[in-house]
Length: 252
Ligand SMILES: NC(=O)c1ccc[n+]([C@@H]2O[C@H](COP(=O)([O-])OP(=O)(O)OC[C@H]3O[C@@H](n4cnc5c(N)ncnc54)[C@H](OP(=O)(O)O)[C@@H]3O)[C@@H](O)[C@H]2O)c1
Image 1 (tube, rainbow, N blue to C red):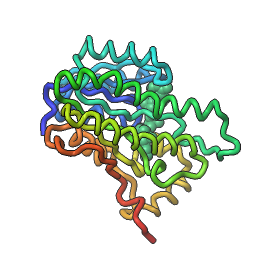
Image 2 (cartoon, rainbow, N blue to C red):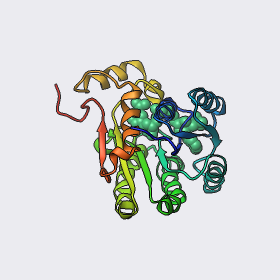
Image 3 (cartoon, helix red, strand yellow):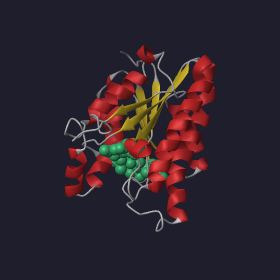
Image 4 (cartoon, rainbow, N blue to C red):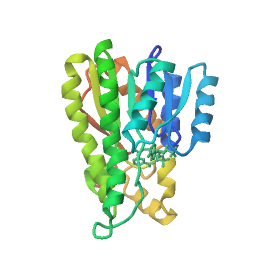
């Protein structure tokens, strides 16, 4: 499985899981743009790690709640690395907000929708024509079992993660005859990033619901993303693939 010659753009490249997605895509041969908003130092560190593996890397600032910032960032990636062949919509906001619907403000709702759903839409819109022109493209949207199962106190996050699945299936249909695939990965819990924002006793309770009784190693997810980004996954499109160790299975 080789991604040599491909340019990947990973949003949330400064985050816990985005870092590993960037590294694994580079290990398979891709050059990688890592999108950050606040954490420039982390994105720059991941870019250095990728360069040490012999691939090109670029840390790019984009405020995903701003269309202008997204468009400027994509232009920078295209001019410094080349057209985007692989888009991984991984960044998210409001992951552990824990506010029930009656207390949730419209401002917070709008902020989460902007980053989690509108930004993937804008990014897909920005890279889709280039992919169509080159006759090859891979789009991977990072969803969550909170989107398919719901989550107490997580109305905006759950709604955006469910929305990504509808977006995925529609883009898959529109890209199918242009050799652009679009799939979603539906995450359980992983040993990185936002899962560590959850208080310890709750983490334990969540893990008890996982059929495998453990959280995932980030690489167990990144390799699935790399597969979906590869030529080998050429006939897989419109899928929402749960990567969760069986968190949604009936277990007791
Ligand atoms: N970790 C888990 O167990 C788990 C479980 C289910 C789903 N997920 C999903 O996996 C993905 C990655 O999660 P994670 O755990 O790695 O989270 P994380 O470490 O908290 O990272 C979140 C990322 O999103 C970026 N981001 C947030 N707001 C942004 C904005 N306005 N503009 C640009 N970037 C923005 C952050 O960038 P800066 O820090 O640079 O601002 C950061 O890189 C998310 O889609 C999440 O929903 C994770």
